[in-house]
Image 1 (cartoon, rainbow, N blue to C red):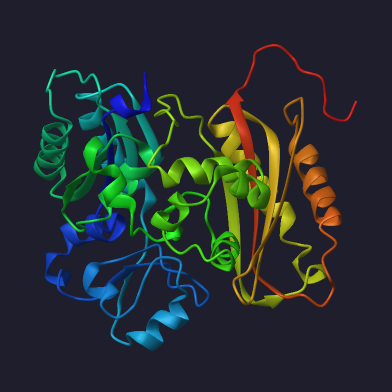
Image 2: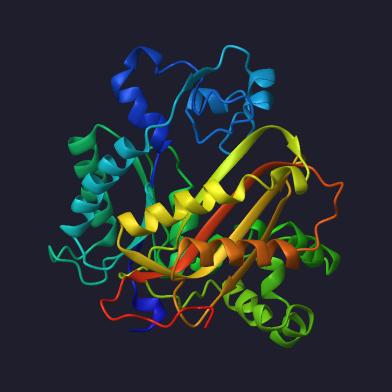
Length: 356
């Protein structure tokens, strides 16, 4: 189906974890509330809108949050509860379309080009979904409606919270003229700096640049940048989105060097392996993550043709990845994590060991 004919909705729940908690604590609705562990090194999982007035946001350290807002109310996260509410929301999505691509517990793309209720207008579908979510859960969702995923995601953020914003096909080029380059998927700080060096500051600026110049500076991604600048995104909504990874992390009480972290890897691999067994999954990829005390993240991954056969295999790969990272002995870390990816249901037939 041509990109221009698609009708894509991006649904994004408003301050999801915090909103779920505030349903049970309505007396706190006007207070600055964050969902976070009480651990001294914890970071915010979600911030209510009154908390955002003080500059509080997800991924901010609680130390920083308490400096900005000493009277912040902290609620411990309950992910089982959030998963249950997320399942309710997905049941609503399924009444309208089978083409659902979840991005997280509180966010998903829906392709409603041909929807199950034969509603001709995608805007009307989005309005129905938002009303159904509110009726079923008491929570508000923001929605963006557009001809593709790139624009639908931007649109859902436009009238937050509790908003609906529509970009019709004939409005696309006008709408993206003044958009910041940071709105483009995959444009982080480094790419943004390189674009600024070329005197490019908005998507409108990017529209004026020849595709070959972008390919020269950014390789294959230059072609993608050129398409985004025209408001084009050919990515389909992937209904069968593979679960991305299972990971476990630990935040330390103090900053530790790599050698001081050495006792951490065994319990982390045990937890990951237990989760794999519980879910009857195998994994072919392993990731190691370390977060420096300045919050910079170091990460290294490796995947294999055969699934890991044992926790011992997983531990060996973790040690191999750490060895390949060439970490300076004086570097100090506040967090360590192990993840596995390329997950699939465990096959009945025996498989060759990774190490044979």
